[in-house]
Amino acid sequence: MDVELQILKHLPRDAQPTVALIDEYCAEYRDLFKEVRNYECFKYLHLGIISPIKRKSLPEIAKVVSINSAQSLHHFIANSEWSTEQLRSRRLAKIKKSITGKCHNCSN
Image (cartoon, rainbow, N blue to C red; front, side, top):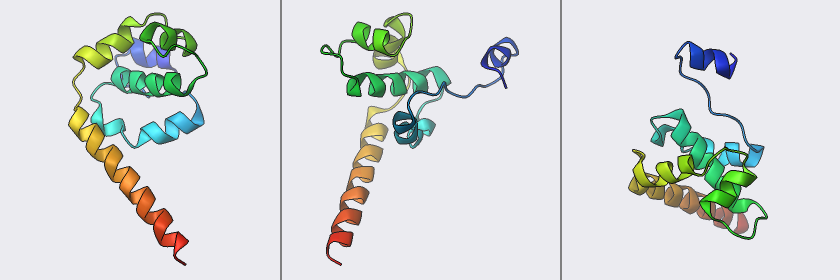
């Protein structure tokens, strides 16, 4: 369904796609965010971090990911309801799984 139509009808909408790599990586964290806008900011921050810009400030990231204002990124970091502990725990579990898988394959 068209995003504009979803907004007009007050329907839940899917997050805007970014780059396949970012979308695939961030998808495993989607359930940690109650609102789609927060999840989009999470993806935009990841996209900005891997971008070739020299300064990784919120205004510069906002420019490179083509959002109107860095304010939404700031609000996401400062005020949104998401758990850094849950995010950190999931990220560490993914890293451990990845390391274990690679080491296991190396011994064969």
